[in-house]
Image 1 (cartoon, rainbow, N blue to C red):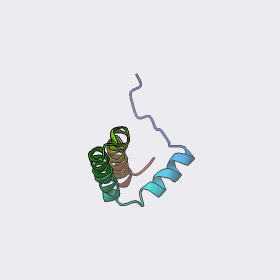
Image 2: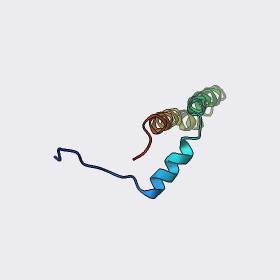
Image 3: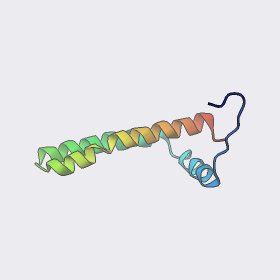
Length: 78
């Protein structure tokens, strides 16, 4: 376990991705998560159980991407 003041720099690709994703408003991810839940519910009501489960599982990754987006916006990258 390393202690002290170590520095870590992100790779060039990570910085480019973070620069682009920081331009996306955070509420886009929230609406995407809510949209996937709504579509999932509609598919479930229409009897498309497997498709409903597939689409419904998108909500968590959208919310995680939103958290990542918020961190990049507030903390920046290295």
